[in-house]
Length: 136
Image 1 (spheres, rainbow, N blue to C red):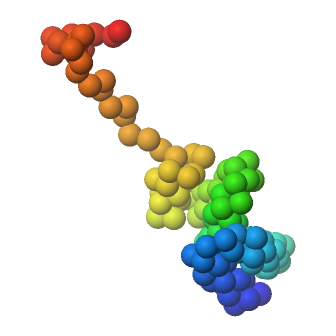
Image 2 (image 1 turned 180 degrees about the vertical axis):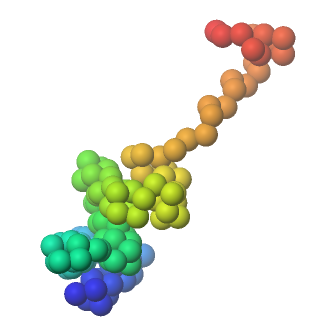
């Protein structure tokens, strides 16, 4: 299942890079989600109940490819939901300190994007440098 899912993710990526192939890319991304999702479900239902980190990472990437495909189709709500699923997989499965979780949090596309402090307002003809610390 893992190999087939990885192939579907690669095909989804190739089709995303080709103009106008978002429908086909989405089909492959969804196939990857189904396959690796099944592998994750089977692993968590086993006696050990341990899911491999590679499977969780692959599932997150499959969700991310689905989200990118939805963006290309201008289905913004579905894209946001798929990005959220990718984020939740890595945050819950790999932990908040894992490098994939942190990478997704830095992505502007992630609904849970972490932002830096808001920049200060630029000076204008109506604000002098001594007013920079005051609120408008």
